[in-house]
Image (cartoon, rainbow, N blue to C red):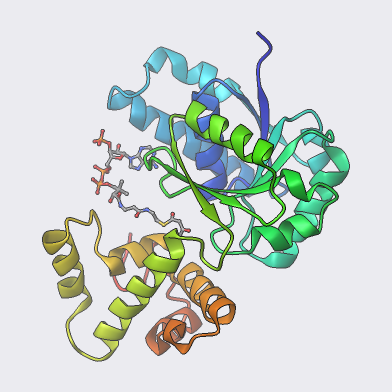
Length: 283
Ligand code: CAA
């Protein structure tokens, strides 16, 4: 049987995780990243996470070299031409994603599907910039991608039933559970998660409780694996702020206004785990 070939654009946290799960499921993966250092970091992270899975007995250690060999680095979108599906996992900026999608639209075969891993940008808007809006869809993975079972599959206004069915089948082939949602600001995941995180930040700002206390309430009272402020540090406070702004603008409702403390922390460069400081100190 011919090996199925997919592309992933961006080797950052989400991109390398997505490449990891495709390769582990037997797909040939072309990982496209223009920044050489980011490519090296992405490939090293896949290797570390596969070794971690091997140590836990979730992957046969003898299979790790073969899985790594299925991830081939490419430096430009042209290299993705033969893929049946490309998942875009680049920076969460409309202009960046629009440029990548129109580039993919030029190089991919007409029947290929373009999926975006955007966490909040409108799929309908991204699709409209291509000549194949029926074949553009959201495939929203969750961090850490090898661990989290969900793929939120977002249908833009013009996404066809056939595209949805193909992406659903691919998500199942990855061992993930696809959940269908329609295109609206924040989809379902971030429409519900981010206001909760934002409200937790208001509670800290107003002195209702410390960050530690808020997190303990959620870990012990609601069995969340991480409290909302630990999770905010994990996601990145800049990402949380961007998503709150998308919700505020998309809904036109002041209940989605970002907490001023969140804005101040992002202004200070306290972005959470990746910058070494957020609600907690890291590293
Ligand atoms: N790759 C592979 N395996 C990994 C991994 C990775 N990157 N990170 C963790 N793991 C594995 C560990 O090996 C471990 O395996 P076992 O269960 O076999 O022991 C398991 O995951 C749990 O990890 P740990 O024991 O190290 O730590 P933990 O129990 O504290 O779990 C966690 C870590 C999985 C991250 C857990 O804290 C968790 O689920 N947190 C919530 C994560 C979450 O909500 N993610 C969604 C964020 S929102 C998003 O991504 C989208 C958006 O649009 C903002």
